[in-house]
Each structure stands twice: as C-alpha cells, then as structure tokens.
Amino acid sequence: MSISSHFLDPPSVHKTQTPIMIVYAVLFSPIFEELICRKLILNQLNKHTNNNISITISALVFSVLHFDLTGFLGYVFLGIVWGYYYKKSNSIFVPILSHFLFNYFIILTQSVKG
Image (cartoon, rainbow, N blue to C red; front, side, top):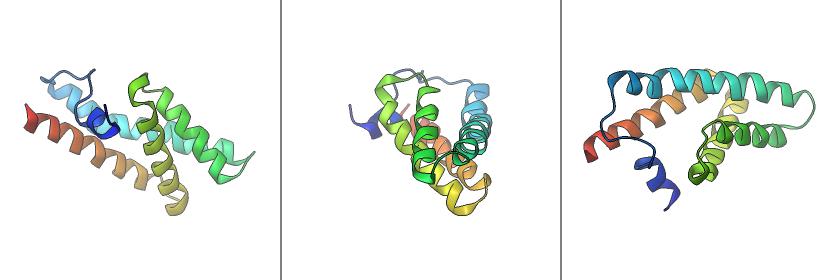
C-alpha cells in the first residue's frame, strides 16, 4: 500500500464517520498535535540541538502518537514538513492551518469515495 493511498483510504477509518469524529479530526487534532509536537517538543529540542535534528525527532514523536505502523513514514514526512513550516514562519498557526487543510482534504476525499 502506498503512503498516499494509506492516507486517502486508511484501514482504521470507518466509511461512516460521525460528525464529532470529523470535527475532532479536522479541527481539534491539528491544534493539539501541532501545539504538542511543534510548539512544545520542537522548541524544547531546539534548546539542545539544531533545527534539522529537532524537526526530525518531533516528527518521529508525531508519527508514534498516531499509533499506526503502516502509516509511520507518511506521518514522519508530514511532521517534517509541518516542523519546517513552523521554523520558517516562526508561527504555530502555519502548521496548524496546513494540518487542518490536510485533514479536511482527507475527510472530504473519504466522503466522496463513499
């Protein structure tokens, strides 16, 4: 299974999602995950090491927090991208918005696929 197909059709997601699950996945999850993985962990790691190592470690933590071995590398990649966005923009809102849009696209794609 390719990484993109994993995100577009993850095995752990039911085809009939309740509205509260959608709100959590699209709104709350990006806020909490970015605050924890980027704002808290990445900033703490940056006190002890360089940006690349800090971004990579926070991305690994981000991936582990999803408890999904088949999507591990995909989550690491996303964590690196959002870590880079955070460091370049110096704003937590950039990765939160990107994460929000990504999750929204995934939910929208799943609902269209049925």
